[in-house]
Image (tube, rainbow, N blue to C red; front, side, top):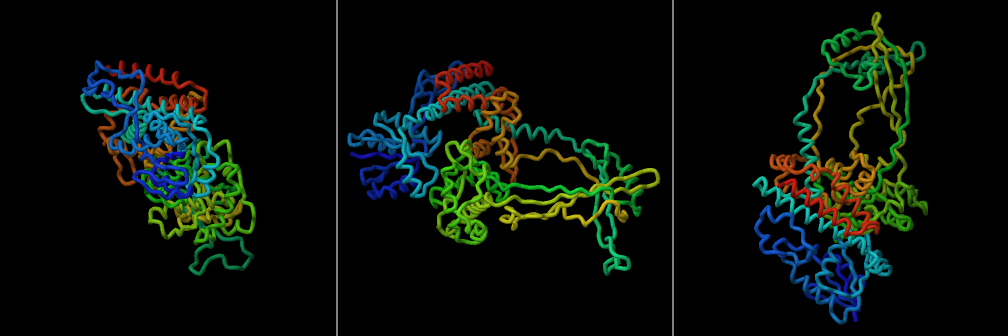
Length: 615
């Protein structure tokens, strides 16, 4: 008798085989020690096409819509038949006593296995391998702590509902709109609202009318308070300190530095030039910036887009290689930025294994202590769902063995992990108000300066810190005499909204429910947004491949085709609220709070509504 283990990919199957000491290699499987280990290749089976139910559906006709099968069928996907038949043979073999689901630990991984199991008509008992890292230790621990497959039935029900709902809405609406407008118009539950975000931003940019405004800048000179007789000028005869300030209106609630008339700005600049004044006030506020939270996939993709110029898809591909091929990071397709309490004892070992510079030096402050400074920004069981945050595994594999892209992404993950344990970055912000009285008028100028007190976690990013936009101010005191030696008028214009980059679009997708009024929908979107961390990159790439959007340098723009589609689809399809309602329902199904049948009934009613709208 033997156990059949089904992984999602051949590379994962090889890792499991190594741990189980299985060395017998066959065509599409590995065997030994009472196990047969095989794999899917992503999705091997999926939902049948309309013409699989009725050949007449091959032709698109409005009269046939909506197409809603009584029971959704599963069929092999194109080109997967050989591997699928092999899995069916192993799963139903009389020598097989148990099947282990070792696909990725999440909703989509569960669906991949269950569709194979369903298509194969397998009745053997199922165990679930649920791991977040492909190190030997993690795999071994996972194999020792497997649960019965039935404990994940609700997760599968949620996954199946997502799959079937996407099929029903996407297929029917695409056919209806295409027939109605005589142009191929593919529609998707997540793709279309994402495209709508690009279109709405482009409309804001196109409608924007830039307005001129002016600011008045003054350079103040003054002397240090020195004992009588000491020099108060440098060797070039200049005063010991200078600083600049912007004129402001103390009565203005916003844009207090702006003047709408050039003449007024020029008049102020002329009046205060060379006039004496005094430091009206000096106030200093300490600012503390906590260390960054650990990465989930979306935040890693944003970081790599901002700092490395990588697309979301490229970051995901590189991270997947670091996870599967190199075993240097934990599972990357996660939506959590926290770790669970049971991981705390392992974290110190990851720090201690940093033997390459500069990471060895960064880790040095923690080596003399047995404990790391753990906070609830790092460890929080309540905020860990299927998988914890992305962290290094502590592998001793040389970083030099990685490709340049792999090194770049691994560097972001490793620095982020170490920085999470560092103290806050502390600095002072000093605000100075300078008053220049001219006859019966008083003109006020504001100056800001920043002084670093403790580098904290920013020490790990010193190599890429930009020049401080607010350099330190000289040591000024209230009542100190100064002179407005130079003045100038700055001509500026209001700027239009910026086009989306992949980093900002990922943020918008993740936070799509932020402005919803329905609190329960907002909560559902908070935990999922548009798409999932694992699918958002593919959605962006699909929009580009479909010619609905285009990438220009780092920015994303809708095409004319994309603008036209968004103008045609019903409001419900382009609104993230629709996705919010779905995700709320799917989350409740996964939690066992909602019956899958009730959810699908609501989807079928929605499809009928969309088709009637299109007709």
